[in-house]
Image 1 (cartoon, rainbow, N blue to C red):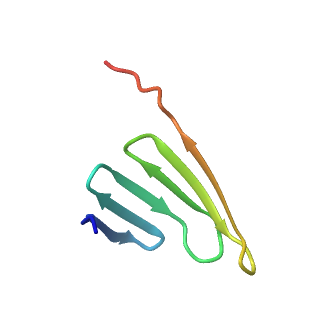
Image 2: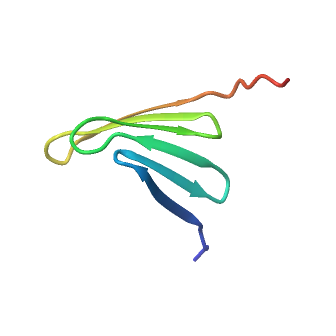
Length: 68
């Protein structure tokens, strides 16, 4: 069984900082509304819980990063 590292901090109401071995991300939103997550790897996720056993998630990964 592999060991993983993941830690989540609540920095403001409705805002969480998530840290794992490879990246960090910020999640905004709580309760019944949608949640938006942006990662340092360029991944953006929007998710919404729907009634019953249903859920909706849209993930966009941006691979183009400009080097200065």
